[in-house]
Structure formats: C-alpha cells, structure tokens
Image 1 (spheres, each protein chain N blue to C red):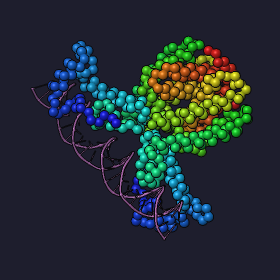
Image 2: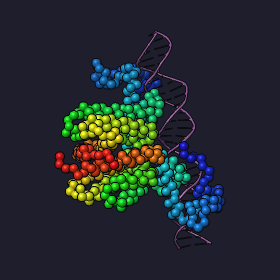
Image 3: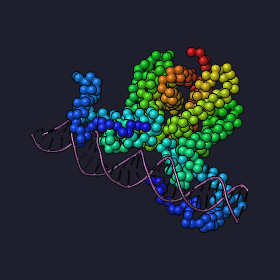
Image 4: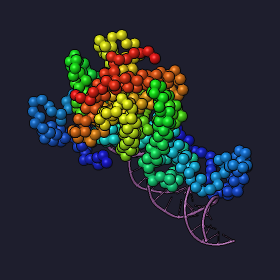
Amino acid sequence: MPVNKRAPRDGHRGAAPRAGRAATDSRAADSGRDEDPQAQRRTQAERRERTRQALLDAALLQMEAGESFDALSLRSVTRAAGVVPTAFYRHFSSMDQLGLALVDESFRTLRAMLREAREAGPAPEHIIQRSVEILVDHVRAHRPHFAFLTRAQSTGNGALRHAIRIEIRLFTSELATDLARLPVLREWTTEDLQMVAGLLVNTMTATVEAILDVPLSAPEAEAKISRVAEKQLRLVMLAVPLWRSGD
Amino acid sequence: MPVNKRAPRDGHRGAAPRAGRAATDSRAADSGRDEDPQAQRRTQAERRERTRQALLDAALLQMEAGESFDALSLRSVTRAAGVVPTAFYRHFSSMDQLGLALVDESFRTLRAMLREAREAGPAPEHIIQRSVEILVDHVRAHRPHFAFLTRAQSTGNGALRHAIRIEIRLFTSELATDLARLPVLREWTTEDLQMVAGLLVNTMTATVEAILDVPLSAPEAEAKISRVAEKQLRLVMLAVPLWRSGD
DNA sequence: ATACTTAGTGGACAAGTGTTCACTAACAAT
DNA sequence: ATTGTTAGTGAACACTTGTCCACTAAGTAT
C-alpha cells in the first residue's frame, strides 16, 4: 500500500505562486546561510541531478526491500522519488535505461573496493583476512548496490543480466592477472589462472549473498560468514602450490 | 507476445456441447486406441492433475524465457496454460503458492540427481569427473527446473527465496555428512566440513548458472564449463589433506 | 527587460492486472 | 434415475501500469 494520495508537495503548482514557497523554504529550511544545504535548489543542473539521483535511489530502495528489478514499475519509482510519472522521461527513456545506470553506479563502488583492496596488497600473510574484511565492510556500507547487483544478475531484461555478467567476467580477468604476479603462480596457463580466479570470485559472490541475507546487523552471524569465507579462500590458496595442470 | 486470441478451445462451452469436441479431439489427436493418449480425459482427478501441471509448466516456461518469478502474472500463466484466469484458483490460492509448488517439484528432480550421484559413488578416482557429468546432464534434462531455482533464489516474495535457501543449506549439510565418511576427512570439525561442503556447492551452483547462460546447445562452451568446474573441484579436494583447522 | 530552454505538472488514454460472482456440464455417488 | 460435487467458464469490478499531450514557471542567455 504505497503512498498514493499525498499533500500538494513540491515543485510548481499553478494555484500557489512561487513566492510563497520560496520564502517558506529558503529561510525556514535549515540554517541556509552561506553554503546552501540542500533546500534551495539554485542551478538547473543541480536540480536535474538531484531528482535523477532520487529516481535511482528510489529504485535501489525498492529492490533492497525485496522486489526484483523487472517487478518494479516506472510509476512506483517516480512515486517514491516524489515526482510525477512523466518526469521520469526527462532522465531515462525507459526502466531498462535506469537499470543500466544502476549497473554503472554499482560497479563504480565495486571498483572502488577493488582499488582499496589492491592498495592494501603486499602484506603477504594476512592478505586474505584483510580482503574479506574489506569486502564485508563495503557490503555493509553500500548494501543497496550489492543487493541490486545480486538481484539483477538473475532477473529480467537480459540486457541487464548480460551487462552484469560481462562486468563480473572482466573483474575475474583482472584478478587473474593480479594473481599471475604471485611467485607460486608464475608459470600457470591463462586458463588455469582464470579457473582459480573464478573460484575465488565465486566464493566472494556467495559470501556477499550470504551477508545480504542476514537480517540487518546480526553481528554474530556476519562474523561467522566472514570466518567461513576466510577459511574457504585459505583452503583454495593452500592447494595452489600442489597444482599440476596435466590431466 | 503470448497467445492471446485463441480459437474456442477446450473445456465446456455453453454454445458447443461436449460431443463435438470429444469427437474431434480423441480421434484426430494421435492413434488413440487402446491406451488413451492424452486427449480424452476420463476421470476427474486426472483432468484436475492435467491442468495443474499445465499451470506449473506454463510458469516454468515463462521463467526460462527470462522473466523473473514475481514479474509473471496470474493471467499470463493461465493464458499460456489454456484456461481462464479464474480456473487458477481451483489449484492455487495465489501465485506464491504456485511458486512453492514449483520449489517442491524442482527440488524433487534435484534430489533424484543427488541419489544418482551417490549411487555412482565409490569409484575413487573419477568421482569428480563423474559428478560434474551427472550435474550437466541433469541440467540439460531439466533446464526449466534449474532455471527456476536460480532465478527465484534471488527474486521476489521472500518466502520463496527463503524456502530455496533452506533447501540448499540442507543439501549442503547432507554433502557434509557424506564427506565425513571419507578417510581424509575423518576427524574434521563439523564447521570445517560445512565449510568445504559450502565451497563445493557454491562451485556447483556457479557452474549451473554458467550452463544456463549458454545459448541452448553450444556444445563447445558447455564442455569448457564442465572442464573448468572439474578443475575447480579437483583443486579444492587437493587442498583437503593439507588443511589444519587452527588459526 | 526579453526571449529561450527545460524540469516538472496534471489530465487523459488504452491496456493489463487480481478477484468476485453466478453459471454450466461433466463426473461421482447414491 | 436423481442428486450432489467440482473443474472450468465468462462477464464484470476496481486498480495499476506505460505513454501521450499541452501547459507552467523557474533558470539561462541575450
């Protein structure tokens, strides 16, 4: 039962000329003196970006709440974003386009994570532990993005699904070339490198899904998940020196 | 674009009494002489079961075609099943109920697979190879069921999602106790056994998703996926003898 | 100060949705 | 032969959905 009837809200309304609104808003809002906080939207580009983001966030929120991507409707998204349905088209030509924008956004945060993990790199022993830590921290900090990716990965539109798969595969390849620098993996074939990288990424992915399943902030469960993930990664790396590609 | 306008088709229609239909159908269908093939539904229970199955199959088909579970509508399902929307309620009280029925059905085939794999058990060397083979064979043979499970696992209704997760966890535990019988794993803690089992199941799951992604019957791609899966499993099992649970 | 651009409005439309209701005709049991 | 039971029908309902349209007022440039 989403909010349908809302009080006359924002934006421009024929009956009530702007003066009234502007006066109320720009002063009463909150201490808007020097830096404008957020209430008075000044430039047009700024305004545009604001509602665009509102649309993206609304979609993310609904997905985090359990709906799959292609179950959400243009109207419900605009409703949650506080704009009228037709305003949607000023920003995206269809829901699918919005989906692709979300893929972009989500992978941006994912790559930020990867960068951080790489910088914390050359601590040889605790590297696994550290990586897992970074992973769960990022999932906690950007829950909606990760929820979106895992949901949309096996849902709807094909195009979305495909975009995400591609990106993950790319991600895996990067990991593979990273691994290639390790002494133990010096002379592995590329296929075998891909194979291990895939295994690691799978484990990470499963870990993310497990964390997302946990009812928000049940710290013990989360801790256990990290512990298991660590062990799994350690186990895999343990096997690496023994590997002989031959059949 | 599902069939919307169909010729007056089945069931009872006020204007055209049954006789006409039965005659056309039970003869023209296919060589229906001794054993009734499928056209003339005799007992009532038989008829009931038939359309129930038609509903389930219709839902499966639409999901295999890419839609996520909670994106499909009661009406489109009944349409594809060749019955009128209201007939749906004779079998399920809601789409969610249908979903649960599908979970049942799908896991039945999955357990059949597990049984087969267990029976082919004690060939010590090729066991991994054999397991992967069984897996991909079953996926090929029951594509819709596997597609449903992987889709519904991260989509909609929460209840469905939960049911599937539970079932998979159970599945993992079974594998863990199976593993416990192996000599190498004799004295592992249960948590560590769960950990390895989880790793193996994750790999299997990822493999299934990979296969489902492959455009139907691209045998080379499929072969490559199996090969990689085999390697990954072998790699994991390679590490097992070296494992020491200590921190 | 004037004209242009544009983010957002509000009303309308056809189409699709889930669910209710009274119905019918085949089967089942007596 | 009569009487229930029941799987499926078909029309109607109150909504929701995506998209089109003309409109408005704030912001931008001249």
